[in-house]
Length: 250
Image (cartoon, rainbow, N blue to C red; front, side, top):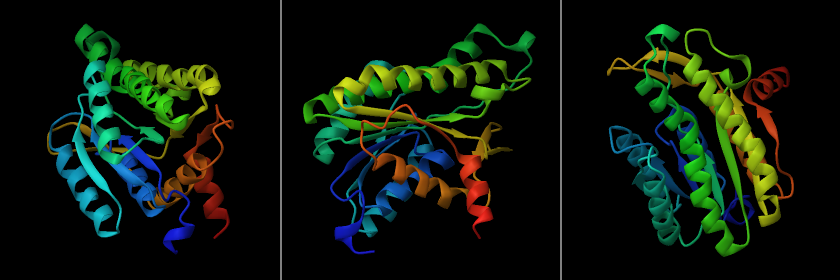
């Protein structure tokens, strides 16, 4: 595809949670569609290595890309870091908020600290990211936001009540902000990702993995959503449905 016909040429995007498989797939898709991309990890840890690898891939393809280690648990850090991303990219048009930290434990063994951490990373982090991006969008007259949530937001998840509650909060945050930010020409949509499977990582935590062709379907879906007019807002898409549709079309 020629550079001039790439749908996101000239657009500046920030992906928060780029070290997750979902965030990584979206960052690559945005770069392939022509966007310059700020690659923000959830914290300064081994996720930076993932972001750096994606950065090299995007730069090799001619994109401007940079890695940033956010602390998504601190609103002020997200605000200052988003300002830095905007300055270095030369603007901000798109935010994809994809932080995700899975937690499973019976209710009786879920501590106050567990609840606070799960809610902060999986719900409050979205709020911090959108609040920071909205400040930057006001400088340029509008933008697009996409929040990534897990299907537990709608279906619940036995043995992971705190995680499901956080995902539900994120989903309703997207619905609320779609109405609130529309007058500012900011479109807000949500994408429910229900095709991740949880596997044991080296650190003993659980990490999501996208199966099969889900990454390609995800990329096409996200680029389509982010290239639509900001007045088209408040959408709730389900990745599973698009994967099934793609399979039927083969």
